[in-house]
Length: 435
Ligand code: 5AD
Ligand code: SF4
Image 1 (cartoon, rainbow, N blue to C red):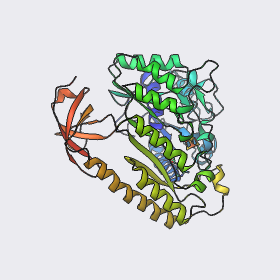
Image 2 (cartoon, rainbow, N blue to C red; image 1 turned 90 degrees about the horizontal axis):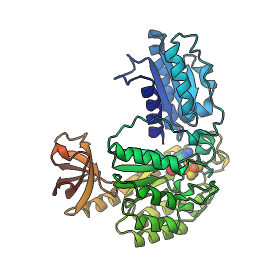
Image 3 (spheres, protein in one colour; image 1 turned 45 degrees about the vertical axis):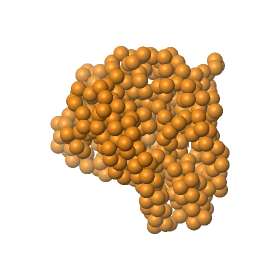
C-alpha cells in the first residue's frame, strides 16, 4: 500500500516537472513516506528524519515533507519535535501535495512555502474519487487501488486509525486505469486494498468484488490479475467461483491467518475461527488446482500462551502455506490490544518468531522441490538483481524464478522449466518461445 502511495507521490512531482535525484545531497525536496504498522518501521523513520537535520542545515532551501501513517498520527507534533520539517500529509491527503508542489515551484521563497500553511490532516472524504497521476516503478506489473481504509479494527492494528473508514473507488475509474495500463504495455495488475473482499459494500447499485474482477477481466492486453489483501471472514464462495472461472486471475491467494488459536483470534477481533479458515482453504483447493496460499502470522499477541502458540505451529504444518510473513506483536498507539492483559515477554516473542520461521522454511523448501522438472509460465520482469546473467520473473502462483534466456524475453510470458529449487529461490531455463 505504501509503495503504491509513493508511486502517487512521485507521480505528482513528476507532473510538476521534478525528477528523482540519486541521493539526498542534490535534492530540492525530500519526502519520507512513513509506515506505522509496527514499531520498528516507526523507529527507522525517526532515525532517518534525524539524519536529515544536517542536510537542511547545509541547504536551508531544502524542503522536507513527511507523508504516510506516522504523519497522520503525529500531525503537527512533528513540527514541534522536528522544526526543519516543512510539510506533513497523511495517506488520505496525497492529492493536497499537488497544491504544495505547485505553490513551491511558482514561489520558491522560504516564506511563501512556510511550513505550517500546507498541513492537511483533516478527513478528505472525496479522496477515493480522485485519480492521481502515478509514476510506476515497474514496466509490466502495476498496482491499482480499489478500496481505501479499513472498518475491521483488529485489536493490534493501527490502520483503521491512520487510513480511516472503508471507501470503494468507483468501478468506472478502476476500469479506465486498467485499460490505460493495458495500452501502455502493462501485462499484470494487482488490485489493492486493506480488505478487497468488501469492495462495493457502500455502493447503492450491486457491484461487489467478484463483479469487479469480471469487468476488469474483459480488458485486452492484461494477462494476469492479482489482488491483496483478502480478509478470511469476507472471503466468499462467490469469489472462489470467480477465481476459478476467470483465466486471467492468478492461482495465488494471500489470506492472513494471524493465529491458529481460536482464543487469540477472538481477542484479535478477527471474526473467524481456525476451522472457518481451514474450511475456506479446503474449498479453495478443491476448486482451484495447485493454488498457492500465503499468509501473515503474528506471534506473542497479548494472552498468547505456549499452548496457543503451538496451535499456530500446528496450523502452519496442517495447511502447508507456500510462504508466510511472520511478525512479533508490536504495541501500537490507540489500539485495543494495548489494554489486554498478558503481554508477552520480548524474548519469548523472538523465540516464537524463530520457531515459526524455521518451521515454514522447511515447508517452503519442500514445496519448491516439488516444482523441479515442471514447466511454468513466467512473466519476465528483467535481469535478475542477484545474478546478472539470468532473467527474473514470477509464476502465476507468485514464485520468483531466475532463468537463462535472451534479453528480448523481458516483458513477455515465457515457459520455463524449473531445474533447481533452493530454500528461497527457483532456477530454470526458458523452454519455448513467448506467446
Ligand atoms: N504487530 C505485529 N504485526 C502486525 N501487523 C499489523 N499490525 C501489527 C502489530 N501491531 C501485521 C499483520 C498484518 C500485516 C500487514 O502486518 O499480520 O496482516
Ligand atoms: Fe488492520 Fe485488520 Fe484492517 Fe487488516 S483487516 S488493515 S489487520 S484492521
